[in-house]
Amino acid sequence: MNACVLEVAVGVLLRRLLAKPMRSPSTLPRGGIPMAVSCWRKGRKVNLTRVSGSFRAAKLKGETLLHALERELHEELGIKIATAYPWLTCLHVYTHATVRLSFFRITAWQGELHGKENQQLGWQTPANLTVSPMLPANTFVLRALQLPPVYAISNVAELGSENFMERLQVALENGLRLVQVREPGLSREAMRELSLRVVKLAHTYGAQVLINSDIELASEVGANGVHLVVLSPVLPTRSHPGAAHLGWQAFARMVENSAIPVYALGGLCCDDMEMAWQHGAHGIALLRQAW
Image (tube, rainbow, N blue to C red):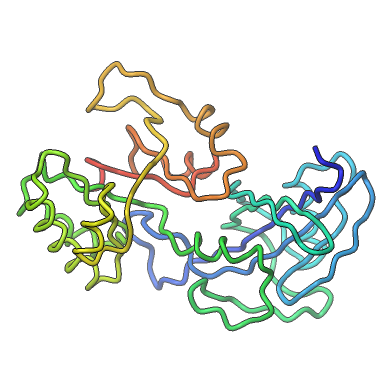
């Protein structure tokens, strides 16, 4: 490890803002306070400037990043982490230091959140921040927080177009907010017609739509983006019986230190969300299980 790189654990506290729980875990809690904590270099304390909503302290020798995060949140905010998931990693160069930020999503804690040093605290939504200044390294994290953890892939090939559209509407009503249109068996014109219908319906619910691989088609139909890759298959799948699969340990090794959100795909259902988060996934992608 480069001796000039500061190892920093970052906790993003999340809470659900919905009045009632979703029928499926299609959205993460929306509110969050990003807190960078626990810098370490050669076992010495490194003093960095504190800004609103950000906390840093020396990582004690022998501590893991998660232990350092637990200690700092208890010292600064009076809470004890109950549930934390490894997430993204980012190497960022400031004028005064180079830091490797290891982000954790914290979804449960014990104790009443309060600033023990009279810090001002407030819940924020990633798309509508009202606090400043914001650390430059937080920009990509705020974008990632706006990606829901459940990602549905169209299945017109098995369901038929009308049945699929009916099921899509039900899923959107139940909270689905990210859909990929992927139908390799359709002609381009049929894909265009289907994509236009999906985009129109999804956008009425505030959901985003990705088109598989075709940048030009995505632009034509007004989609939100293009899908290029996911990491799969994690588990055995119906579509490829007997084929090799990654397993969760290999998946975790491959996404470790990733600076982009990674969705797990292959043989999964909504009940696998907790396992996916524990192994560093942003969320899960579903084909048949989504509909």
